Length: 529
Image (tube, rainbow, N blue to C red; front, side):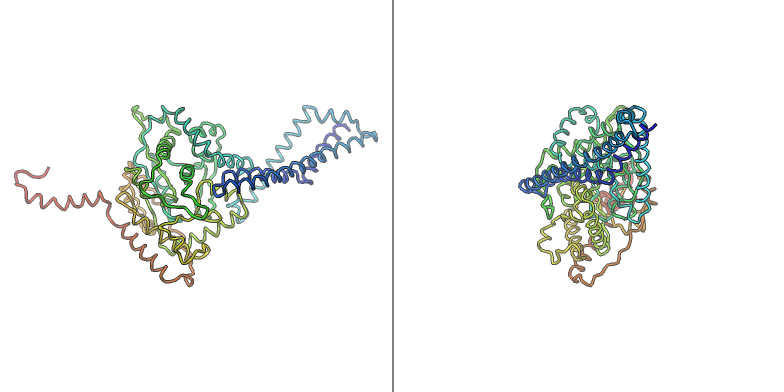
């Protein structure tokens, strides 16, 4: 009996010393150095010399943590074992008996079960505490293992591009059976309503899109699907980090497409800005990759054929705010594409952008993983990752370069939407988000006509999901009148563009208007069919 008591005290002593000496927190700190190294390797904002210096510093830090953990580990086991040895010398327990009990199968199994139970209870209490806290919604929910997996994925993009070629060959028969036509690109400045439109359109069976489950190996969706489905878990919806009431889960559609552009067009991304694409820019490898990627998303969860045995017809649906930098390029490269661009009144929109920028500055400061995650997926919209799109050189010509001021975001709004108005053609649909909020059924019917959806009523029936956007108070005292006037002028043009009939509707109207005249000019014996 003394030997069992000695074994219990030995294990308890080891666990207490692990807690007192902080071996778990120190191990996490060492792991953070490894993660930071992976972050440095995948950071496109650093040159080779900067990466080399950062990796050297991390190597020294990691060696230091190795020595610390080695000494702590020795103390954690040496102290309890030393106490047991002293107790055996005093005749209180048998040294050999305690070791025999400690290494026995029943004791090891019992210790393992109790440890797992303790971990589960503590984890549940932490989750409950986060849910009860005011800012618990925005807590980083990725475990250390999940974060490490993401860091590895972000640091191995060239490897994934190469693996995608293997994926093309391995799944070529399934991919060949899928036809993806008339892709839909939803894009605008952030906070314009793109997420809502994505969620509404993704309800239609004809569309395929990215979801959170595609992370972190977005570039190889079929390989990652084949591997990850073995470990798939259900996920309850929760509010996203924007704090705007939008709930997401692993099965929610998400904006991940920018990762493809980052992998092939690195020259467009500077540390402080993103350069727009010009029509005619050639990148045949990317176009082939992108088209194949669309078809791979359609293949996931399907055998690639219809009930009649014919090819599966699907449509790629994308929400990517970055696509406002390449509107003309997309329309040129994908002649059958449709582009949807929502907009809001400039003052409200700019104030929302400013609010989110401040929000993500705080998130990125307290959570390096969140900052790196957003940079790796190409979300350069806010926070420390801010890289505004330099429409027509507006950044160097702006009168207010401070992103913590409303005037900056108003000028960004004006430059962005003015650029989109200039490049928009017949395959672009501007959506007045205020009007969508007031008349959701009418506007969704208009959107369905533009997209040519096979289930128009299903999209119209989703009108109950449309909510009026939150109103923001804005201090305009520091904004020059010229900036306000420029924004108002662009907004007036957007409202007019959102009310014009589409090109095919105009053609139908001209034809219908001409019918009476044509009928009068024809002989009565030969009426129009």
